[in-house]
Length: 466
Ligand code: GLY
Ligand code: MN
Ligand code: MN
Image (cartoon, rainbow, N blue to C red):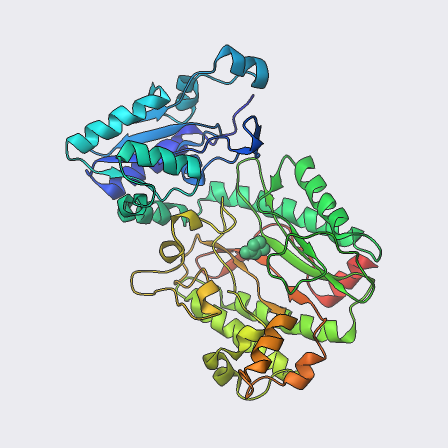
């Protein structure tokens, strides 16, 4: 088995920067993931290494961990050598010291020796910096090593380490941008396959199969479960059992994760048949106009929250033009009336994780000490608010989602009656939803679309279906 890594100097440099940013301040403990059982012990979910561990050590192998001593500079990779049973059933791997050498680390030790390092540090009154664990296995281990209950691990998480890791990972290096270009271009091919196969009479799962086929043939996989649905109003549905019908649309939100674990996250909404209906065209143009406006605002120094609000403004203006909304757009947005149609945020950071670094905390990734995430419906789902910097990679994904259950609930409460024409809106109850999503790198002067261009205008999409 061959391991995919960047040159070892990449990892040496990343760890050097991390050490500098933490200063002389105890141990950093970074845990890789282990295989996780799906329905019985030996039948595991596909292995996915922890992204922070990948970033600093690059080793895509289960049950590894590492310590970085910020006082002495010592780095140790912990892992167990394969048993003959492992070799018989799953094949050979490099030894732990061979793997560590690929990441530029000279010292290794058995996995169970982590306890010794952690206890010694704690006994000597030194800090042990950990990141928030999200896997049950790692929670159990940390609870034992730190001698705290699982509930109390959160109190031992290092905000200093979280901030230092985010500060590094949030700026994508040219090497990473190259990987992301690759992942997004594979995602574009997945989208094209789905669009070309969309036709009346087939099941949504047949389109899901096309997305997987393209990803796997490119030595990639899906970075998150596919959303391919004729009920596009349900933001993150994973039900694929509907039959596609003429006159409806299909929303496909799919992204490849490539062999180096960088991902794309693209959405297109297309007609099931050859062309959009007039109503679909009208609302599609509203979403596209909002998207183009948001893209035109992308550049360093602009707050993403402001771009989100401007995108909302365009959505409301468009919805007002077709008489679904009424009144002053700015007032409607200040009141929150647009959340009847756009319940989520405009986008998020993208990288090795689809919602990049969300394991480290949305507040730290998307906001700052002075800009806090809001808690009201709508803005509570805006994962990114902070000012943009060159090197960020993010998504722009406006949408209009017409959710009959939400219409019924808010109409009964007479909610936002000054801004919503419920009579008109009720004639759209079965409309579904539209989202359009692309991925961008923030450059020194603006932004750059990542990956190959994926058709997005009405004309281009209908041409693809032709
Ligand atoms: N695919 C998940 C998202 O767009 O946020
Ligand atoms: Mn997204
Ligand atoms: Mn998406």
